[in-house]
Length: 119
Ligand SMILES: [Zn+2]
Image (cartoon, rainbow, N blue to C red; front, side):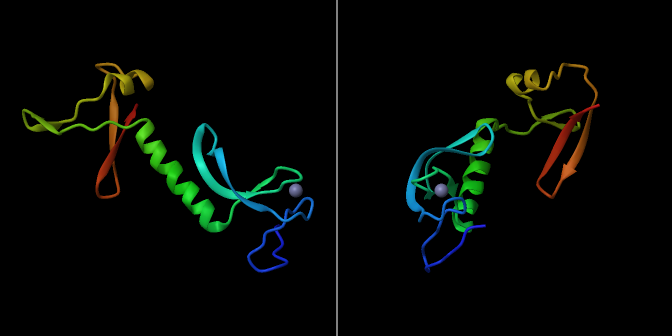
């Protein structure tokens, strides 16, 4: 736990040093997703990072945004006979080893999307 001995000041839980507000050049809030230029607190003695709840929320939001842009595709819905068709990008198909003829299950997700799962 981080102690707040003086209002607005954050002290390192490990060494009681006052932590300084810094901009971290790189930080992985979630493994494999690197955020850049992130505000946070750093202990100058042990290099431990600390984030306020607000900073953590921003990190979570930025991580989600990155995840969306890392592997997402925009497609238009087309029509084929009586069905609507969405083209599956070959990169995505390869990623999950999806081939023509593979049986899939389609499940609605909330009111604005669906999930396609291999059977
Ligand atoms: Zn420390």
